[in-house]
Length: 549
Image (cartoon, rainbow, N blue to C red; front, side, top):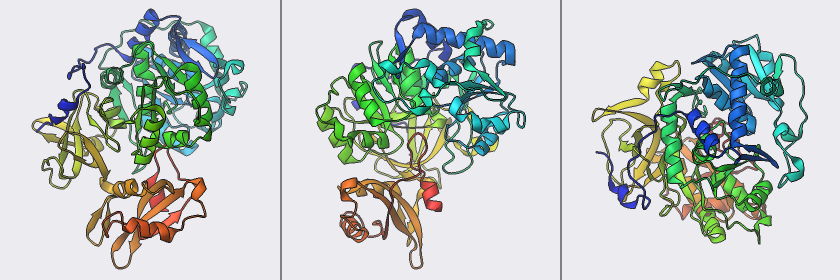
């Protein structure tokens, strides 16, 4: 039965239903450019891109790739670059032609790219200059025929920058064999054919992170993207006066949707960062009066650990939130003490173009996924039997939502196996184990595949991690399974200590502390200190890599 309890805690003065616009994502930019032509759309290391400029350059780039590279409706086009104005211009140029954007993690290797290019049958790529060396060997050897190189610095103004500029942005434009320079596209002044985009057009194929297997392309139409972009715009109360800190990577659905696509609907200003830098973020918040900041917990942990925070002005902030990993309770309390704001957590997937759940900004709960967003039917089932479960019971989260992808690209078998029919509706099986409280708020327990079977007892690593975070010495923790001759599997915790506790606390002391904090079958029998964890660019800890190691 569809959950209704959460409506009692719905944000005040906000309708519970959302009509999804039939306009397209490109229409959103065109509308913003008509309404706010001279308003800054992007602040980029001292440089400014207005809404008119963003729109007109997207048009010119679209005209060039249509007339010179033959890009047509349905063609998949690679975007392989870090956060920059060129990222968004490339995206909107692709959408302008009713082609399909394929944004890929800038940390990907040449062999990773070989897979994506082959899977997507990609002929053209937009590539950050510093990443061109990874792409060059694939031009002509794979389906990739052309690549456009973007030097980010052409949109920056170092003399006006609030802080240190990354080396990639400062680098002067270079020439590479097999490349087409960005300036050639914008200077040509070519106009694209008439725009006839429809909401049902396939618009984007973000790939799953691949932390639990081979990456899969998630097919999203304008309509599925619009559902969440419009929903975020309303949920976060964005206006044309809002200032967004765009620090999450734009190749990832969370960063793209909440820090770019939703702000463009509102006509907000984006303060864009190519790389995470806590000092730059602090100065940008002060200088530009940042109001909205969607991040990931590891980013906020680093930001709040900055000794330079004392006495700084963060009063412009109105909403700070994010997802990807549970925020430690102590970090949430520190944010509230510093800013008066409670962290607004959310939950989502590439398959749902970011969030399906968000905490109500006026009544969030810490370490909580939130409540179902506009139009989302979220239920909990027994993963083995498919039986629907109730409040307080742990099971797999399934969702039926307007932002739900249309399927995995060229992978019908995975598409079918990841869905289930209930009450005549098609639900996506998230693979996440959750529980719901009596008020309709959802809480993460763990991934189905991450469970540890310790002597027959189920141990969910995320639960153990959340308890470990209560210890003042622990900055980050990742729990994995370890073989055990008697128990079969046992709990192992990999721990990064806060700098002031390094050498001051031992593994044995942490194990003894953990014994008193959780059930005897749950506490870590093994603790290993680390100085860093492997992560995705979006900040998620690669637990599978740590598990395999």
